[in-house]
Image (tube, rainbow, N blue to C red; front, top):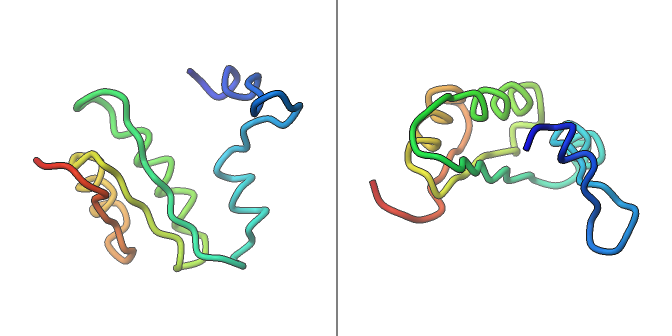
Length: 93
């Protein structure tokens, strides 16, 4: 799904839509630590998702970190944000 398609989705039986990462970070505004779980749905391919997450977290509170089950995403995130904690939730290479 692209961003426009995700914007049409609703949470459960409510009128609430799924917020973007930018909207979540603005709402939290540094008041609590943030862990972003990077979920890629295919092996290999483009690093666009990791770059987009890194771009948003780079200018945000240093307490914001990223994690992924995917070791490829973890490696990419570590290269993109060497000053941040990046973790692998589980899984093997």
